[in-house]
Length: 315
Image (tube, rainbow, N blue to C red; front, top):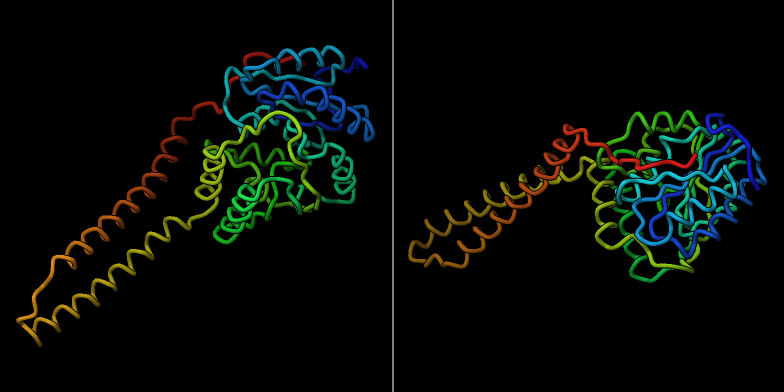
């Protein structure tokens, strides 16, 4: 099905999909996304952002664009990462309602219909909440621990087990784009901007084709961005740790003075000195590391580097 819609015309719905080496998934992604959004309106666009794929994904994306002009493609100049790819699509979409979904089909595109219905009820954002994950025990435990941690320390409530899978109104997206940072954590920014939000429970499918692109290192990086961008906990922890160390030191000084005056012949061992040195050295290294992390983020913000570079677009 080919659409003769003008590429500059505003769409009712824009669906943003980052794609990185998903050649096995793309044909199914095309069919399911087109079919799902078509049940809402035929005035839509699906923007697939090729995040520097090294397989046949770019060719497949372009081929499907020829089949349906509503299937649009943004090719980035290299791999900039999952969050930057989402941002590239968000900044190039025209929809009144904007959906976000990963390209691995673990999140069902069919739920966009339900998300849209909730928006029509008066909500501004509808996001998916994974009540059940069909993934390995270690990965489920890691996600659960992380979300509980960031929810407990974040200055802004971030819903448990919610990812980027969502649909929002244009007004919300405009605020998210104003608030973008170098260390992207879009689901956190989505919570931070406020508005009337609704969490939709669903079962997340396991990956049927291809391999996960979120390595352990990338997951930790995303977790870092969430913790440091939306919480002052690390730097406050440093202050609290310093107070504890000072109080502990004062108690130890009182103990040492007591021993000195009541039993001057008591030998002073090397162990106590070594433990004290190692402990305070560790505290100092932790302090420098946390402060350094904040300084690095200030440095990154000051450089104003583009978060992505577009090689070409098929609109």
